[in-house]
Length: 133
Image (cartoon, rainbow, N blue to C red; front, side, top):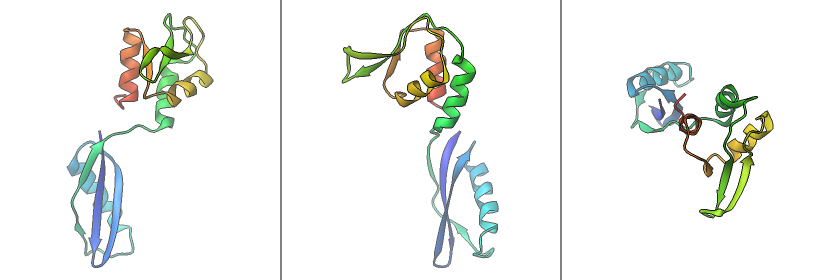
C-alpha cells in the first residue's frame, strides 16, 4: 500500500487529494470520486501524481502491537539505542515482563531506534513498524 497525493485542477482552483491506495489506478478513481463532491464542478483534470511509502499512524501501530504483544512475556529485553551506542542504551521493556498498553506506547515513542535480539517477534515487530500488517 502507498500514500498518494493527487492534485485536482479546475480553472484557477487546485485541490489536493491525499490518501492510501493499493495502486495508482485505485488512487485516481478515488480522487475523481472525491473531486465530484467538491463545489468546483465536473470540469476538472488530474495533475501529476506523487507516490510515497505508506507510513502507518500511531493508532494503527498501537492496535497491531496490542494484538501481537499485549499481555505477553517476551524472554528478551527491548531497548532503545542512544547515540548509536549499546553502552548508552535504555531498556524499554525488560525481559519476561508482562507487556501493558503503557509499555506499547513507550515502544511506539521509540519506534525508530529500538532494538531486540534476533527472534521471530523482532521480525514481526519490524514488519508492523514498516506498515506490513
